[in-house]
Length: 146
Ligand code: FES
Image (cartoon, rainbow, N blue to C red; front, side, top):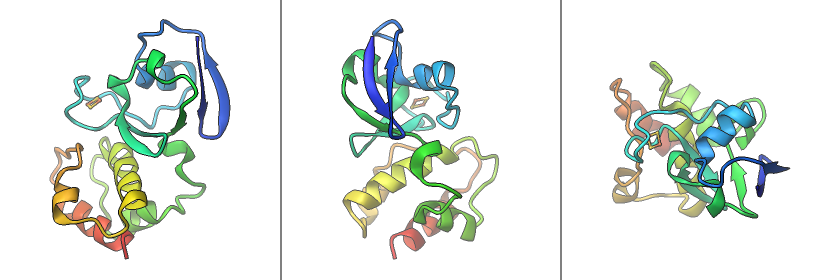
């Protein structure tokens, strides 16, 4: 059993402690915003915020999350009102949309820690878009950081 807060709600997952957070969120909580991409920590599609840091949920076993505070794209804000979501819409970033929740969560965590991130910090984001929306994503980051 693992107890944590997900989007402000106290939850207990009665699953194998080695279950990745991604699957607890998607299967047990029906929070499907975090996506299953590469499953090896390389794409960032599964990114959520854990205790204020962007984390790849496919790589986090429940056993490592006792007492943690988890925020998913569903809990980031209501009505797409988070500055990153507003910038996303303004820059018309979305293409296929698969990487979108993970990117938005990683950028939200980055801007929380560093409101005006350096080019190196942006380049270090662990997320990848296979559609070619990367330039629009960079514009959205710049817009959200203003
Ligand atoms: Fe977790 Fe790709 S699915 S990093």
